[in-house]
Image 1: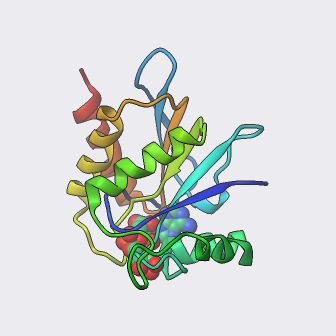
Image 2: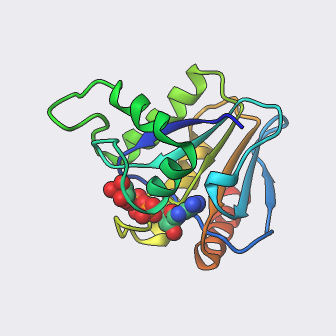
Amino acid sequence: RRFRVYAMAAAAARVSNGGGGVVRFPLSASSALVIQKGDITKWSIDGSTDAIVNPANERMLGGGGADGAIHRAAGPQLVEACRTVPEVRPRVRCPTGEARITRNTLRVAKENNIHYIAFPAISCGVYGYPYDEAATVAISTIKEFPNDFKEVHFVLFSPDIYDIWLNKVDELLKD
Ligand code: AR6
């Protein structure tokens, strides 16, 4: 299985595992938002170009949480690929800035013709971002950023975060 990984410093979403629990919300006639429980390293869409978003740190050379899991699943090629990303200043490949980084990820994915993309609950683990606020930033960014994704997935590792994401989607996408 092949997947591309885009690193993000800090930002917005959250993810967890519990098995099952896939809920789809239409964004337009040709695209949908999908909320699901699970391990983002196991996520893929058969036969399609896909991308997962790594909640990395600025240095982009691995860490704990989802970042650690993604590097373990990807193998050493991922850290090698990350090393080729130019530093904007010493030890910083991906500067922190939550809204800008979230939008940058979406733009990079669009430029690379990604049709399916999966986000974890960025910043909701090691970085300790409040879940409700993280859900608001993540979901409203997907809603407001013009995109051609067929599906944008949030893959949430914990049941509590999954519930918060579902409620937030109901609140923000009901119109
Ligand atoms: N699949 C989906 N979600 C996961 C997985 C997984 N395999 N593993 C953890 N999560 P975190 P952050 C959830 O800590 O807060 C690292 O050291 C987790 O339960 O991964 O953005 C980096 O190198 C939580 O809800 O990311 C950075 O230094 C969510 O993913 C720093 O942590 C995000 O938690 C980034 O911290």
